Length: 221
Image 1 (spheres, one colour):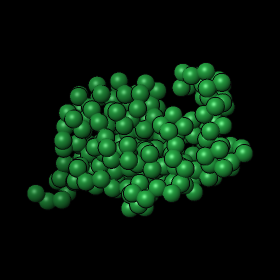
Image 2 (cartoon, one colour):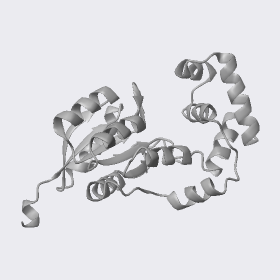
Image 3 (cartoon, one colour):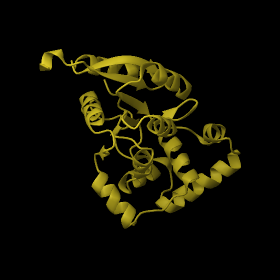
Image 4 (cartoon, one colour):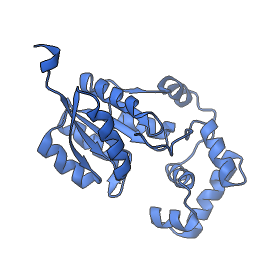
């Protein structure tokens, strides 16, 4: 079959921010090798859309209003071994990277990356869905094998991500369904472990330790 007659690969976009979905849709529509078969803003919507469209690739944000994009990816992988799974994240720390790997993702891409990088990751995911790729994977593996930075609990990592999102103690408490006093305790322990006295210092220390990455607030598009 000639290249011009090749059937485009189908892509499902999962992100609760409409502007990000629009930017990604435009990027995929510029590439003749892909066609966007649908968009979803929640885990529930994505599951129904995946069943209805059976996409070649799903591009999934890690954080969704009704659950984790990693859990969604894991379910999709369990149902279909041949689906390509690209995980998008605002915070590309080691914890999320290895979470994507464990969930069976094909690629892990920070939202700060150009949209063309997401398309390239989708192309890889479609061709070799079981082969995981991510920028900085080798360095992250070294940090996992030989940890030298602060060791955070799962809850402390969640609090760190929300601090980096700009949330205050009250908002973090509501988001995690814990008391404000408990939240303050987690924040205090975070600051101690990161040798920081305020939010900005904590975030920069976390970036240096590989717990967060620069530039996550930029949107693909």
